[in-house]
Image (tube, rainbow, N blue to C red; front, side, top):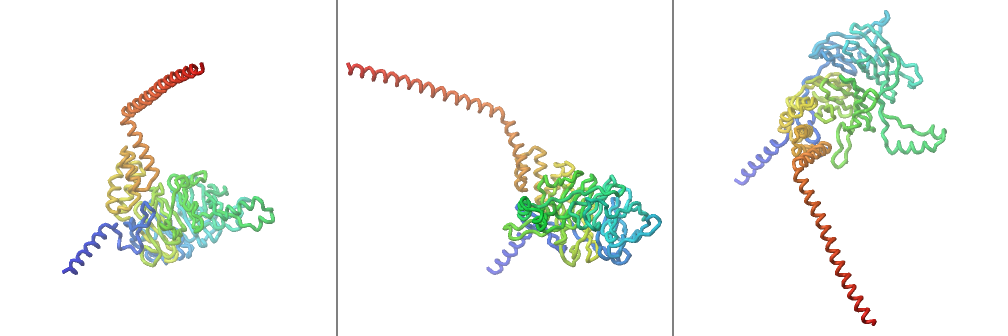
Length: 502
């Protein structure tokens, strides 16, 4: 009997623990996790689930080889850079049918073939910008494959590299072209709309390590001969980039030794806007700092909603953030199953889906938004548009499904600040470990308290001041009275002394 009761209690205990834990999708081939307010990795619900894998054969063409890049237009058309087959495959919005294949282009009456192309960018007016890497050139073509502009290695003293191997390419609304080029650490190489070299843009900063500081110190005293043998400190090169609808350029780098500027949002002047908010990206170190994360970013994408998806080459993971760099979801991983990768190479996203290219599997994995992901994105969209109060309902629903979801606490704290409910805002800001929001809520609470109790505070100040004045006067009178008695006693004593002398 006791054994039966013990077994029943064990079953009930396990059931209670499972019901209290966040619901995690069992169908995923990778760990679904996030980070709580203490910076510890905790199980979380999946924001995306791997729906299917797309190969060349699935599209009705030959298999991809060395799949290097994908680009999705606003209308949903996909441009796939099949580097090993020296071609660009265009697929429909469902990613199940080939529309066109570019394997040659026309330029001034001659035919141009691609040689290991690595990247493509398509502008709103339909221009194709292609990084024709092994041919050491950039092609700008119309939709019919007619090359309008051919850009080769810049003839400039500012361009010191011997080679010109463009790896990634984008263009802005003004027609300026930006290219990530091998062996260049000065930023992306920039050209104007006519193909003229315009300099470099968005260079990373040098991380101030002990080795860098030591070299800088010794260079102050070293002569020219000694400097030749000293190692120079250079920033990490940009690996890839993307451009949003407002013209801001987002860059990433794949350096494992430099955390500085791993992900950037760069304005027209080349300044990193993320530096102002001390944004953090990727995995966090363990609580006891016994293990540090190894993240290197091979590609980055910003969708029409401002969501930032960073592709981690080392671990094959996707880290998705909102426009304020708050972590939303982590998914993917290393492996051979659907939803995991051997060697990630590129990422694209729409409002509902994320597309990841694998250059070893030579497939594109389509991740679709889950119901939980849809709820989080809805709340994030309302929040980013300034509808803080309208975002409260979905944020609370998010917490019902995952009580460790830090982004929800941040959203709720901001909504309460906007509503003027500062005590509640302080509570949720503390749960989110958001010092900035807590300070702002406390300031509002303090001002509100002073405003509501101003008359009492004024009367308290008046009474206190009157009490201080009364005490000072009382002490002064007491001192004067005591001083008068002392003088009288002194006179009496002097009189007696005079009589004795007589």
